[in-house]
Amino acid sequence: MTNNILEVNNLSKSFQGNRILKDVSLTVHEGDIYGLLGKNGAGKSTTMKAILKLIKLDSGTIKLFDQYNIADTNAYLSDIGSLIEAPSFYPNLTAIENLKILQRLADVPQSNIEKVLTIVDLQNVPKKKLVKNYSLGMKQRLGIALALLKFPKLIILDEPTNGLDPKGVREIRELIASLPEKYGTTVLISSHILSEIEKIANRVAIINNGQIKYEGSLAELEKTSRLVIKTDNNSAAVRLLEQHQYLINKQNEDGFELNNIDRATIIQLNQLLVTHDIGVHELHVVKNSLEDMFLTMTEGAQ
Image 1 (spheres, rainbow, N blue to C red):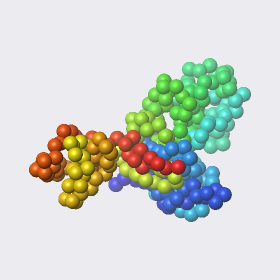
Image 2 (image 1 turned 135 degrees about the horizontal axis):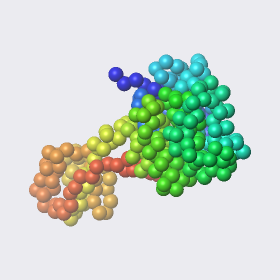
Image 3 (image 1 turned 180 degrees about the vertical axis):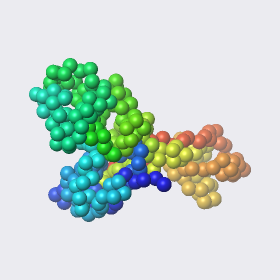
Image 4 (image 1 turned 90 degrees about the vertical axis):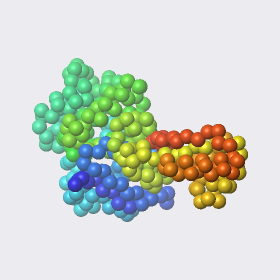
C-alpha cells in the first residue's frame, strides 16, 4: 500500500478579494518526485506556502505523513525542508556558518553539515569563502543543502533552477533526481520549465488560475494520444464523422484531431471516410507529451 506523504484537499485562498487558490486538491505519495506545474502566478508558490503555514488559508485541509493535520500542530515541520523562491542566507558568513545556525535551531547533529555539503557538491569550496561571493548556482545548491540539513521526509522546492545556466540546471536536476532513492526524501517541486520536470518527475499536477487541471503519473500521460487526420475535404470528413458519433477534438484548415482512438476504431474510421469518397492523405497517431497537456490546460488563460 502506498503511503501518502501529503494530502491537500479543497484549498481556497484570496488576497484583497482576488481568489488565488480555488479548491486545490493534490496527493503526494512516499518516494514521489512530484512536479507542480503552472505559469507564473498560477498558484504554485501560494500552495507551497500554505503547506508550510506561511500563509493562512480561507478553507481546506492539509494532512502530512498520514498523521498530521496542519491546522492542529506544527510538529510536522520538523520533517519538512524547503526552498521557497530565492534562498535566504547571511551573505557575510560562510556556507558552514550559515548551516551551523540552522543546525543549532533544528537540533540536528553537526555531522549533517558536511554530509549535505557533499550531497550538493560544495564540499571543496574554500571554507572561508563568504556566501556573498558565491555564484547563483552555488547559492541554489546551498539553499538545497539548508533544506536537506534535517534529512527530512519531504522537501519542497519552488522553482529551484530559476536563473541558472544550462550546466547549473542539469546539476540541480541530477541532485533532485537522486533524493528519493539515496536519502528517502520525497520531493515536491514547482516549475514552469516543463522539459526539466519531465526528466525527473514521476507524477505531476498542472495548476492554472488557481485550479488543478490535471493530476496523474507521467506514465499515464504518455498513454494518451491523439489521431491526426488530413483529407482532400476536411469539412465533409468532419461532418461525416460527427454524424457517426465521433468526437472531433480539434479542427483547422489543414486537418482535424480525435483523442485516444484505439487501433480498431482507426481502421473503422478510415474505411468510413474512404467509402464516402473522401481521400485520406495523412493519418497518424501522436502521443501526448507533458507540453501538449500543459498547453491544452493553460492556453487562452489570463
